[in-house]
Image (tube, rainbow, N blue to C red):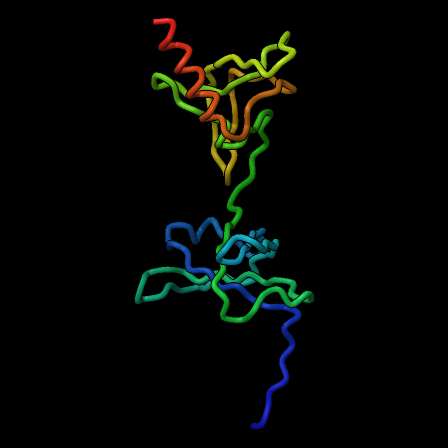
Length: 167
C-alpha cells in the first residue's frame, strides 16, 4: 500500500496493572492520563479489562479511551495513568506537602487567629486516608482555617530553630 488513512480523534492508552488489582477495576471507571513529562493531562474511562493476564510479567492489561480531537496524544507515546478504584467523602482534605513530622507526630502549620502577619502555630493532626497528592485530616484542623500548603518544610525549619534557641 502507498499510504494509510487513520482517524486519531480517539486513541487508547494501555496500562499493565497488578493481578491483585484486577477485581477493583471495572469498565467505565475514571482514569487520569498524563504524558511522561506530566505536562499534558486528560481524563478518560476504562473501556476494556483483559480477561487473562500476561504470562511474561503477570500483569493484566487495562485500556483507556482518550479524546484526541486536539491531536495531543500520539499512538505509541509513553504515558502515565492513575486509575480511580474507589471514592470517599472527607470533610477536610489537605495537600500531602502541608503535612510535616516533628518529634514523631504529624503536624500542620495553622495561621494564628489574631496574627496580622504570617504567624503560624504547630498543630498535631490525626490523618485518615491518603489519595493522589492529598490526605484526609480527621482531627486537629477545622474547616476554613488557613494553613501552610507549599514549602511547609521552611516553616518547620523555623519552628525547630526557635525551639532550639529556647532550650
